[in-house]
Image 1 (cartoon, rainbow, N blue to C red):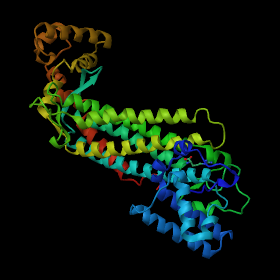
Image 2: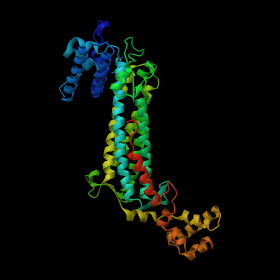
Image 3: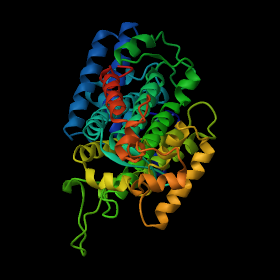
Image 4: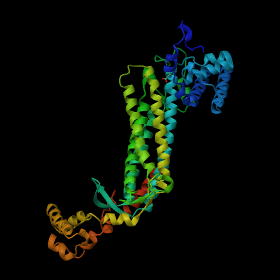
Length: 464
Ligand code: ARG
Protein backbone atom coordinates (compact mmCIF):
# COMPACT_ATOMS: atom_id res chain seq x y z
CA UNK A 1 0.00 0.00 0.00
CA UNK A 2 1.55 3.33 -1.05
CA UNK A 3 2.21 5.67 1.88
CA UNK A 4 0.74 9.16 1.68
CA UNK A 5 4.12 10.39 2.96
CA UNK A 6 6.24 7.98 0.87
CA UNK A 7 8.04 10.49 -1.39
CA UNK A 8 11.33 10.79 0.47
CA UNK A 9 11.67 7.08 1.27
CA UNK A 10 13.51 4.48 -0.73
CA UNK A 11 12.75 1.46 1.44
CA UNK A 12 9.38 0.17 2.55
CA UNK A 13 8.44 0.38 6.22
CA UNK A 14 9.47 -2.62 8.28
CA UNK A 15 6.33 -4.69 8.89
CA UNK A 16 6.89 -4.78 12.65
CA UNK A 17 7.25 -1.01 12.65
CA UNK A 18 4.13 -0.67 10.57
CA UNK A 19 2.15 -2.66 13.12
CA UNK A 20 3.87 -0.87 16.00
CA UNK A 21 3.13 2.63 14.76
CA UNK A 22 -0.38 2.07 13.43
CA UNK A 23 -3.27 3.47 15.42
CA UNK A 24 -6.13 2.77 13.08
CA UNK A 25 -7.40 -0.12 15.18
CA UNK A 26 -8.39 2.34 17.87
CA UNK A 27 -8.48 5.81 16.32
CA UNK A 28 -10.98 4.74 13.61
CA UNK A 29 -13.45 5.49 16.32
CA UNK A 30 -12.86 9.17 15.44
CA UNK A 31 -14.09 8.80 11.86
CA UNK A 32 -17.16 11.01 12.27
CA UNK A 33 -15.10 13.79 13.83
CA UNK A 34 -12.39 13.35 11.19
CA UNK A 35 -14.90 13.63 8.36
CA UNK A 36 -16.68 16.61 9.94
CA UNK A 37 -13.29 18.34 10.32
CA UNK A 38 -12.36 17.62 6.71
CA UNK A 39 -15.72 18.80 5.36
CA UNK A 40 -15.33 22.07 7.26
CA UNK A 41 -11.71 22.45 6.16
CA UNK A 42 -12.61 21.90 2.48
CA UNK A 43 -15.54 24.30 2.75
CA UNK A 44 -13.25 26.95 4.21
CA UNK A 45 -10.60 26.34 1.53
CA UNK A 46 -13.25 26.95 -1.13
CA UNK A 47 -14.45 30.13 0.56
CA UNK A 48 -10.95 31.59 0.55
CA UNK A 49 -10.36 30.48 -3.04
CA UNK A 50 -7.80 27.71 -2.44
CA UNK A 51 -10.22 25.11 -3.84
CA UNK A 52 -12.85 25.69 -6.48
CA UNK A 53 -16.44 24.75 -5.78
CA UNK A 54 -16.33 21.70 -8.05
CA UNK A 55 -13.40 20.33 -6.07
CA UNK A 56 -15.10 21.19 -2.81
CA UNK A 57 -18.31 19.44 -3.80
CA UNK A 58 -16.43 16.34 -4.94
CA UNK A 59 -14.57 16.25 -1.63
CA UNK A 60 -17.66 16.79 0.50
CA UNK A 61 -19.71 14.21 -1.40
CA UNK A 62 -16.84 11.73 -1.34
CA UNK A 63 -16.41 12.16 2.41
CA UNK A 64 -20.15 11.69 2.99
CA UNK A 65 -20.02 8.49 0.96
CA UNK A 66 -17.13 7.22 2.99
CA UNK A 67 -18.97 8.09 6.18
CA UNK A 68 -22.02 6.09 5.21
CA UNK A 69 -19.85 3.16 4.19
CA UNK A 70 -18.12 3.23 7.58
CA UNK A 71 -21.49 3.58 9.33
CA UNK A 72 -22.71 0.51 7.47
CA UNK A 73 -19.54 -1.48 8.23
CA UNK A 74 -18.61 -1.56 4.54
CA UNK A 75 -15.31 0.31 4.78
CA UNK A 76 -12.03 -1.53 4.63
CA UNK A 77 -9.48 -0.24 7.10
CA UNK A 78 -5.80 -0.74 6.37
CA UNK A 79 -3.01 -0.91 8.93
CA UNK A 80 -0.54 0.08 6.23
CA UNK A 81 -2.35 3.43 6.07
CA UNK A 82 -1.55 3.92 9.74
CA UNK A 83 -4.41 5.93 11.16
CA UNK A 84 -7.97 7.05 10.66
CA UNK A 85 -6.86 10.23 8.91
CA UNK A 86 -4.82 8.58 6.16
CA UNK A 87 -7.30 5.75 5.68
CA UNK A 88 -10.05 8.23 4.95
CA UNK A 89 -7.89 10.52 2.83
CA UNK A 90 -6.59 7.62 0.74
CA UNK A 91 -10.12 6.30 0.23
CA UNK A 92 -11.26 9.76 -0.83
CA UNK A 93 -8.60 10.06 -3.50
CA UNK A 94 -9.33 6.54 -4.67
CA UNK A 95 -12.98 7.49 -5.09
CA UNK A 96 -12.84 11.04 -6.49
CA UNK A 97 -9.32 11.29 -7.96
CA UNK A 98 -7.34 14.55 -8.18
CA UNK A 99 -9.54 16.70 -5.94
CA UNK A 100 -8.99 14.23 -3.09
CA UNK A 101 -5.27 15.01 -3.15
CA UNK A 102 -6.02 18.68 -2.45
CA UNK A 103 -7.95 18.17 0.78
CA UNK A 104 -4.83 18.24 2.93
CA UNK A 105 -3.76 21.69 1.63
CA UNK A 106 -2.89 24.01 4.52
CA UNK A 107 -3.37 21.25 7.07
CA UNK A 108 -1.29 18.65 8.86
CA UNK A 109 -2.29 15.52 10.69
CA UNK A 110 -1.09 17.34 13.79
CA UNK A 111 -3.82 19.98 13.74
CA UNK A 112 -6.20 17.43 12.23
CA UNK A 113 -5.89 14.95 15.08
CA UNK A 114 -6.07 17.73 17.66
CA UNK A 115 -9.32 18.90 16.02
CA UNK A 116 -10.80 15.41 15.90
CA UNK A 117 -9.95 14.86 19.51
CA UNK A 118 -11.46 18.15 20.61
CA UNK A 119 -14.67 17.36 18.76
CA UNK A 120 -14.74 13.95 20.42
CA UNK A 121 -14.05 15.30 23.91
CA UNK A 122 -16.66 18.02 23.42
CA UNK A 123 -19.27 15.41 22.49
CA UNK A 124 -18.36 13.22 25.44
CA UNK A 125 -18.43 16.22 27.77
CA UNK A 126 -21.94 17.09 26.63
CA UNK A 127 -23.05 13.48 27.05
CA UNK A 128 -21.58 13.32 30.56
CA UNK A 129 -23.22 16.60 31.52
CA UNK A 130 -26.58 15.31 30.25
CA UNK A 131 -26.15 12.04 32.13
CA UNK A 132 -25.20 13.94 35.29
CA UNK A 133 -28.31 16.04 34.98
CA UNK A 134 -30.48 12.94 34.70
CA UNK A 135 -28.82 11.40 37.74
CA UNK A 136 -29.22 14.60 39.72
CA UNK A 137 -32.93 14.63 38.94
CA UNK A 138 -33.25 11.07 40.21
CA UNK A 139 -31.32 11.94 43.38
CA UNK A 140 -33.52 14.95 44.04
CA UNK A 141 -36.61 12.74 43.72
CA UNK A 142 -35.11 10.31 46.23
CA UNK A 143 -34.18 13.17 48.58
CA UNK A 144 -37.74 14.43 48.37
CA UNK A 145 -39.25 11.03 49.18
CA UNK A 146 -36.94 10.69 52.17
CA UNK A 147 -36.88 14.31 53.32
CA UNK A 148 -38.00 13.42 56.82
CA UNK A 149 -36.58 9.92 57.11
CA UNK A 150 -34.29 9.93 60.12
CA UNK A 151 -31.02 8.06 59.86
CA UNK A 152 -27.74 8.04 61.71
CA UNK A 153 -25.21 10.52 60.38
CA UNK A 154 -21.67 9.20 60.60
CA UNK A 155 -18.20 10.45 61.28
CA UNK A 156 -15.41 7.87 61.41
CA UNK A 157 -18.20 5.48 60.38
CA UNK A 158 -19.49 5.72 63.94
CA UNK A 159 -22.98 7.03 64.64
CA UNK A 160 -22.48 10.74 65.20
CA UNK A 161 -25.75 12.66 65.06
CA UNK A 162 -29.15 11.99 63.55
CA UNK A 163 -29.72 13.45 60.13
CA UNK A 164 -32.39 13.01 57.50
CA UNK A 165 -31.82 10.61 54.63
CA UNK A 166 -32.88 13.35 52.26
CA UNK A 167 -30.09 15.52 53.62
CA UNK A 168 -27.54 12.76 53.04
CA UNK A 169 -28.76 12.36 49.46
CA UNK A 170 -28.45 16.12 48.97
CA UNK A 171 -24.79 15.79 49.96
CA UNK A 172 -24.39 13.32 47.09
CA UNK A 173 -26.20 15.75 44.84
CA UNK A 174 -23.82 18.54 45.84
CA UNK A 175 -20.83 16.46 44.72
CA UNK A 176 -22.45 15.82 41.36
CA UNK A 177 -23.43 19.43 40.91
CA UNK A 178 -19.77 20.39 41.29
CA UNK A 179 -18.86 17.66 38.80
CA UNK A 180 -21.33 19.11 36.32
CA UNK A 181 -19.76 22.53 36.76
CA UNK A 182 -16.26 21.10 36.30
CA UNK A 183 -17.19 19.51 32.96
CA UNK A 184 -19.04 22.62 31.83
CA UNK A 185 -16.05 24.78 32.72
CA UNK A 186 -13.60 22.48 30.93
CA UNK A 187 -15.84 22.66 27.86
CA UNK A 188 -14.96 26.33 27.40
CA UNK A 189 -11.31 25.38 26.93
CA UNK A 190 -12.06 22.21 24.96
CA UNK A 191 -14.14 24.05 22.40
CA UNK A 192 -11.34 25.87 20.51
CA UNK A 193 -10.24 25.09 16.99
CA UNK A 194 -6.62 24.02 16.34
CA UNK A 195 -6.96 23.90 12.52
CA UNK A 196 -4.76 26.47 10.83
CA UNK A 197 -1.82 25.49 13.01
CA UNK A 198 -0.90 22.83 10.44
CA UNK A 199 2.24 20.94 11.56
CA UNK A 200 3.12 23.61 14.13
CA UNK A 201 4.06 26.83 12.37
CA UNK A 202 0.77 27.64 10.64
CA UNK A 203 0.34 27.69 6.89
CA UNK A 204 1.28 30.00 4.03
CA UNK A 205 -2.18 29.56 2.47
CA UNK A 206 -4.71 32.33 3.15
CA UNK A 207 -6.81 30.12 5.43
CA UNK A 208 -9.56 31.61 7.57
CA UNK A 209 -9.89 29.42 10.64
CA UNK A 210 -12.81 31.50 11.90
CA UNK A 211 -14.87 30.05 9.05
CA UNK A 212 -13.85 26.52 9.97
CA UNK A 213 -14.55 27.25 13.63
CA UNK A 214 -18.03 28.49 12.85
CA UNK A 215 -18.81 25.43 10.73
CA UNK A 216 -17.66 23.09 13.50
CA UNK A 217 -19.35 25.14 16.24
CA UNK A 218 -16.14 25.95 18.05
CA UNK A 219 -16.35 29.03 20.28
CA UNK A 220 -12.97 30.31 19.17
CA UNK A 221 -9.47 29.45 17.99
CA UNK A 222 -6.42 28.04 19.70
CA UNK A 223 -4.37 31.20 19.98
CA UNK A 224 -0.92 29.85 19.19
CA UNK A 225 -0.09 27.36 16.45
CA UNK A 226 2.67 25.63 18.43
CA UNK A 227 0.39 25.21 21.42
CA UNK A 228 -2.52 24.19 19.22
CA UNK A 229 -0.84 20.97 18.09
CA UNK A 230 0.91 20.09 21.34
CA UNK A 231 -1.75 20.89 23.93
CA UNK A 232 -3.65 17.95 25.39
CA UNK A 233 -4.78 19.79 28.53
CA UNK A 234 -8.35 19.35 27.36
CA UNK A 235 -7.88 15.58 27.47
CA UNK A 236 -6.34 15.84 30.93
CA UNK A 237 -9.14 18.10 32.15
CA UNK A 238 -11.86 15.84 30.86
CA UNK A 239 -10.25 12.76 32.35
CA UNK A 240 -9.52 14.48 35.61
CA UNK A 241 -13.11 15.72 35.92
CA UNK A 242 -14.09 12.13 35.09
CA UNK A 243 -11.78 10.71 37.75
CA UNK A 244 -13.18 13.08 40.39
CA UNK A 245 -16.71 12.14 39.35
CA UNK A 246 -15.83 8.44 39.58
CA UNK A 247 -14.38 8.99 43.05
CA UNK A 248 -17.72 10.52 44.02
CA UNK A 249 -19.71 7.64 42.54
CA UNK A 250 -17.35 5.23 44.25
CA UNK A 251 -17.93 6.84 47.65
CA UNK A 252 -21.68 6.61 47.14
CA UNK A 253 -21.30 3.00 46.05
CA UNK A 254 -19.24 2.20 49.11
CA UNK A 255 -22.10 3.48 51.26
CA UNK A 256 -24.66 1.52 49.27
CA UNK A 257 -22.63 -1.67 49.60
CA UNK A 258 -22.52 -1.19 53.36
CA UNK A 259 -26.12 -0.11 53.65
CA UNK A 260 -27.59 -2.99 51.75
CA UNK A 261 -25.65 -5.51 53.81
CA UNK A 262 -28.06 -7.28 56.20
CA UNK A 263 -25.81 -5.98 58.99
CA UNK A 264 -27.09 -2.46 58.21
CA UNK A 265 -30.29 -3.11 56.27
CA UNK A 266 -30.72 0.60 55.53
CA UNK A 267 -31.64 0.24 51.87
CA UNK A 268 -32.46 -2.39 49.34
CA UNK A 269 -31.34 -2.32 45.74
CA UNK A 270 -33.63 -3.58 43.00
CA UNK A 271 -33.17 -7.31 42.28
CA UNK A 272 -32.36 -6.41 38.69
CA UNK A 273 -29.18 -4.70 39.89
CA UNK A 274 -27.89 -7.51 42.08
CA UNK A 275 -26.74 -11.04 41.49
CA UNK A 276 -26.87 -14.23 43.46
CA UNK A 277 -24.17 -16.62 44.57
CA UNK A 278 -23.53 -19.92 42.82
CA UNK A 279 -23.23 -21.67 46.16
CA UNK A 280 -24.98 -19.61 48.87
CA UNK A 281 -28.70 -19.51 48.06
CA UNK A 282 -29.43 -16.65 50.45
CA UNK A 283 -27.05 -14.16 48.84
CA UNK A 284 -28.09 -10.97 47.03
CA UNK A 285 -24.87 -9.25 46.09
CA UNK A 286 -24.56 -5.55 45.23
CA UNK A 287 -22.44 -6.15 42.15
CA UNK A 288 -23.37 -2.92 40.40
CA UNK A 289 -22.12 -0.58 43.12
CA UNK A 290 -19.10 -2.83 43.64
CA UNK A 291 -18.23 -2.63 39.95
CA UNK A 292 -18.68 1.13 39.79
CA UNK A 293 -16.33 1.36 42.78
CA UNK A 294 -13.91 -0.97 41.01
CA UNK A 295 -14.08 0.85 37.69
CA UNK A 296 -13.04 4.05 39.43
CA UNK A 297 -9.55 2.57 39.40
CA UNK A 298 -9.60 2.40 35.61
CA UNK A 299 -10.42 6.07 35.21
CA UNK A 300 -7.92 7.18 37.84
CA UNK A 301 -5.40 4.94 36.07
CA UNK A 302 -6.19 6.57 32.72
CA UNK A 303 -5.63 9.98 34.24
CA UNK A 304 -2.27 8.90 35.67
CA UNK A 305 -1.28 7.43 32.31
CA UNK A 306 -2.22 10.60 30.45
CA UNK A 307 -0.42 12.90 32.87
CA UNK A 308 2.67 10.74 32.55
CA UNK A 309 2.31 10.72 28.77
CA UNK A 310 2.52 14.51 28.70
CA UNK A 311 5.08 15.20 31.39
CA UNK A 312 8.29 15.23 29.37
CA UNK A 313 7.14 16.15 25.90
CA UNK A 314 8.98 19.03 24.30
CA UNK A 315 6.94 21.33 22.07
CA UNK A 316 5.28 20.87 19.68
CA UNK A 317 3.62 17.65 18.43
CA UNK A 318 5.25 14.32 19.28
CA UNK A 319 4.10 10.89 18.29
CA UNK A 320 3.73 10.06 21.98
CA UNK A 321 0.37 11.78 21.69
CA UNK A 322 -1.00 8.88 19.72
CA UNK A 323 -1.03 7.09 23.07
CA UNK A 324 -3.62 9.50 24.47
CA UNK A 325 -6.54 7.88 22.73
CA UNK A 326 -7.07 4.50 24.31
CA UNK A 327 -6.91 5.90 27.84
CA UNK A 328 -9.23 8.74 26.92
CA UNK A 329 -11.73 6.45 25.19
CA UNK A 330 -11.70 4.00 28.06
CA UNK A 331 -12.17 6.78 30.60
CA UNK A 332 -15.09 8.27 28.66
CA UNK A 333 -16.77 4.89 28.12
CA UNK A 334 -16.33 3.94 31.75
CA UNK A 335 -17.67 7.22 33.10
CA UNK A 336 -20.71 7.12 30.82
CA UNK A 337 -21.40 3.46 31.45
CA UNK A 338 -21.19 3.92 35.20
CA UNK A 339 -23.42 7.00 35.17
CA UNK A 340 -26.11 5.22 33.18
CA UNK A 341 -26.31 2.13 35.36
CA UNK A 342 -25.91 4.07 38.61
CA UNK A 343 -28.83 6.34 37.65
CA UNK A 344 -31.11 3.38 36.95
CA UNK A 345 -30.10 1.75 40.20
CA UNK A 346 -30.77 4.86 42.29
CA UNK A 347 -34.19 5.13 40.64
CA UNK A 348 -35.06 1.74 42.14
CA UNK A 349 -33.46 2.21 45.54
CA UNK A 350 -35.70 1.72 48.54
CA UNK A 351 -34.97 3.06 51.98
CA UNK A 352 -36.02 0.98 54.99
CA UNK A 353 -37.34 3.81 57.14
CA UNK A 354 -37.85 1.76 60.32
CA UNK A 355 -34.37 0.32 60.24
CA UNK A 356 -32.85 3.72 59.57
CA UNK A 357 -34.74 5.26 62.48
CA UNK A 358 -33.85 2.41 64.81
CA UNK A 359 -30.19 2.74 63.86
CA UNK A 360 -30.31 6.49 64.46
CA UNK A 361 -31.61 5.79 67.96
CA UNK A 362 -28.62 3.64 68.85
CA UNK A 363 -25.32 5.04 70.03
CA UNK A 364 -26.63 7.99 72.09
CA UNK A 365 -26.86 10.05 68.92
CA UNK A 366 -28.63 12.98 70.59
CA UNK A 367 -25.91 13.57 73.18
CA UNK A 368 -24.89 16.79 71.48
CA UNK A 369 -28.49 17.99 71.62
CA UNK A 370 -28.50 17.44 75.37
CA UNK A 371 -25.24 19.36 75.74
CA UNK A 372 -26.66 22.24 73.66
CA UNK A 373 -29.78 22.18 75.85
CA UNK A 374 -27.67 22.56 79.00
CA UNK A 375 -25.78 25.42 77.38
CA UNK A 376 -29.06 27.17 76.65
CA UNK A 377 -29.90 26.74 80.32
CA UNK A 378 -26.73 28.64 81.23
CA UNK A 379 -23.99 26.01 81.52
CA UNK A 380 -20.65 26.56 79.77
CA UNK A 381 -20.22 24.22 76.80
CA UNK A 382 -17.22 22.37 78.27
CA UNK A 383 -19.13 21.70 81.50
CA UNK A 384 -22.16 20.58 79.53
CA UNK A 385 -19.98 18.22 77.48
CA UNK A 386 -18.62 16.73 80.72
CA UNK A 387 -22.09 16.37 82.25
CA UNK A 388 -23.53 14.68 79.17
CA UNK A 389 -20.49 12.38 79.09
CA UNK A 390 -21.46 11.27 82.62
CA UNK A 391 -25.02 10.71 81.48
CA UNK A 392 -23.84 8.59 78.53
CA UNK A 393 -21.68 6.55 80.90
CA UNK A 394 -24.75 6.08 83.15
CA UNK A 395 -26.75 4.85 80.18
CA UNK A 396 -23.97 2.52 78.99
CA UNK A 397 -23.55 1.02 82.48
CA UNK A 398 -27.22 0.20 82.67
CA UNK A 399 -27.39 -1.06 79.09
CA UNK A 400 -29.64 1.71 77.82
CA UNK A 401 -29.66 4.56 75.37
CA UNK A 402 -29.28 8.12 76.59
CA UNK A 403 -32.81 8.75 75.36
CA UNK A 404 -34.10 6.06 77.72
CA UNK A 405 -32.94 7.78 80.93
CA UNK A 406 -35.81 9.48 82.74
CA UNK A 407 -35.83 13.13 83.76
CA UNK A 408 -34.88 12.38 87.37
CA UNK A 409 -31.85 10.35 86.33
CA UNK A 410 -30.78 13.06 83.91
CA UNK A 411 -31.10 15.69 86.64
CA UNK A 412 -28.97 13.56 88.95
CA UNK A 413 -26.26 13.19 86.30
CA UNK A 414 -26.38 16.59 84.60
CA UNK A 415 -27.71 18.96 87.24
CA UNK A 416 -30.80 21.06 87.94
CA UNK A 417 -30.76 22.67 84.50
CA UNK A 418 -32.58 19.58 83.25
CA UNK A 419 -36.33 20.19 82.96
CA UNK A 420 -39.29 18.15 81.71
CA UNK A 421 -38.83 19.56 78.20
CA UNK A 422 -35.57 17.60 77.90
CA UNK A 423 -37.49 14.67 76.38
CA UNK A 424 -38.16 16.59 73.12
CA UNK A 425 -34.52 17.54 72.93
CA UNK A 426 -33.42 13.93 73.17
CA UNK A 427 -35.87 12.74 70.52
CA UNK A 428 -34.63 12.04 67.00
CA UNK A 429 -37.27 14.18 65.33
CA UNK A 430 -36.61 17.02 67.78
CA UNK A 431 -32.91 16.78 67.06
CA UNK A 432 -33.18 17.00 63.28
CA UNK A 433 -35.95 19.60 63.37
CA UNK A 434 -33.76 21.86 65.52
CA UNK A 435 -31.09 22.07 62.82
CA UNK A 436 -33.10 24.45 60.73
CA UNK A 437 -30.44 26.89 59.57
CA UNK A 438 -29.58 27.15 55.86
CA UNK A 439 -27.75 23.95 54.87
CA UNK A 440 -29.20 22.14 57.91
CA UNK A 441 -30.76 18.70 58.08
CA UNK A 442 -34.26 19.75 59.25
CA UNK A 443 -36.89 18.37 56.85
CA UNK A 444 -38.16 21.88 56.14
CA UNK A 445 -34.66 22.95 55.08
CA UNK A 446 -34.11 19.79 53.08
CA UNK A 447 -37.30 20.47 51.11
CA UNK A 448 -36.21 24.04 50.51
CA UNK A 449 -32.77 22.90 49.36
CA UNK A 450 -34.36 20.40 46.97
CA UNK A 451 -36.47 23.18 45.46
CA UNK A 452 -33.43 25.40 44.98
CA UNK A 453 -31.44 22.53 43.45
CA UNK A 454 -34.30 21.78 41.06
CA UNK A 455 -34.33 25.39 39.90
CA UNK A 456 -30.57 25.29 39.23
CA UNK A 457 -30.94 21.97 37.44
CA UNK A 458 -33.67 23.36 35.18
CA UNK A 459 -31.34 26.12 33.98
CA UNK A 460 -29.71 25.68 30.58
CA UNK A 461 -26.56 23.54 30.56
CA UNK A 462 -23.64 25.98 30.42
CA UNK A 463 -21.80 26.28 27.13
CA UNK A 464 -24.66 25.08 24.96
N1 ARG B 1 -2.03 9.06 14.59
C1 ARG B 1 -1.43 10.27 14.98
C2 ARG B 1 -1.88 10.65 16.41
O1 ARG B 1 -2.76 10.05 16.88
C3 ARG B 1 -1.86 11.36 14.06
C4 ARG B 1 -0.87 12.47 13.92
C5 ARG B 1 0.37 11.97 13.34
N2 ARG B 1 1.24 13.03 12.96
C6 ARG B 1 2.47 12.76 12.55
N3 ARG B 1 3.16 13.78 12.23
N4 ARG B 1 2.96 11.56 12.52
O2 ARG B 1 -1.34 11.51 17.05
